Length: 320
Image 1: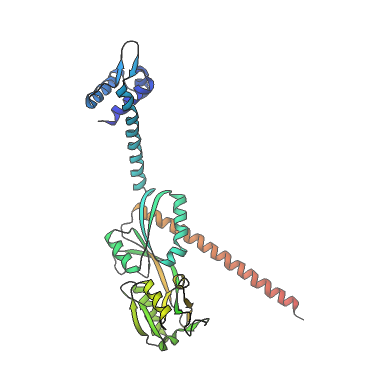
Image 2 (image 1 turned 90 degrees about the vertical axis):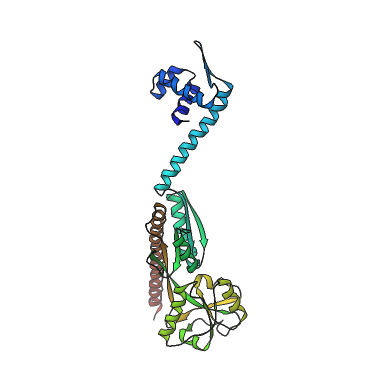
């Protein structure tokens, strides 16, 4: 069944006149009649009855008219979706992310993408770095937000955030009320680490900070799940480690800043080359989100500087 035959049939059904229908489609009447005849042969029933006085749809023609409109609308929509997907204007994109990205950079990115490309539907998966890497390589994920650099040249990346790593202890731990702790004090504490296969960058960040502090960590356990880590630090006198976003959300625990050195870890957006149009769309929205966040930070810092200047001015005026 050819689409042009359906178009010809619908023109006849609308105009109820072969001459007007032919002119509407810029066809000759014989060509229009051939289209209808071929369509009726394929369908196997008469769709249009006509004589010298009138043209009318048969009962089968009336039923066919509604279905023909649906077919042509489906064709139009199919072409539109296909072209929009090819251009990065529509389609589904699978995004993996960690908690810091989910709190800080992903919300404004998705908001911008929804405004600029409402036909793009994000599917979100919160996962640790190791599982994200596997899913990116297999094609299950299109984009990921992970700690550190990807471990293979098969993936490309860009740093988008830098996150502070905090010590996490139970609310009854001796550090629970301290404002901050020198990293070197960890030498005298039993420590809990996230297994390196799950998050190599976090493991390596803690190890490098220990080397810089000149200490050797006393690791009593390694876990591969944030829930297990939270359970252990709240029930045993151990020190765990987490990003600021995760640390402050653990019930029954306290987040304690580490200093000398301050351990930080980068968050990278990662994708598998070559970049598809949908990945390009997401990365473009990410750039806009980063620019907006930078402007907000500059505005906040400027207001802070103005307040500090005003306070100093007030103090100088009050001085004898």
